[in-house]
Image (cartoon, rainbow, N blue to C red; front, side, top):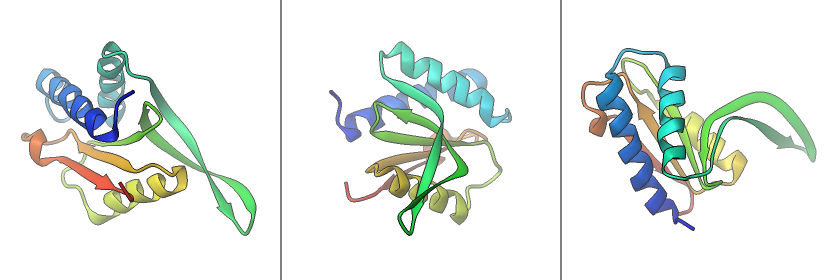
Amino acid sequence: MYTENQLSYLIRGAAFKVHSTLGPGLLESVYETALEFELKALNLEVKSQIGISMHYQNILFDVGYRLDLLIENKVIVEIKSVDLLIDIHHKQLLTYMKLMDKKLGLLINFNSTSLSKSIVRIVNNL
């Protein structure tokens, strides 16, 4: 059983492999598929496109949110392929983490020449 920090290291390594193979400029779905493949090759449990529900006033709503990847039921990975990560991307991931009660999330923007500057680690009571 891996800790969130150990998983973060493995996920980042897989992301670098995907980025060095494919390069920037592709659709998010392409990077998501490749990253899922690499993580499964590491024998990690990976779930993709998981629906997120919201509790409001003791009622459960299916509001249509979908997180990109959930690794070992511990780490959420939100994949982007944009010119620049903006504040709303960070808030989106943090909201997903709160709704799913997860402590660690990685926001990865593959549309970058330097992936090391395009991975953001977000913690929620870790």
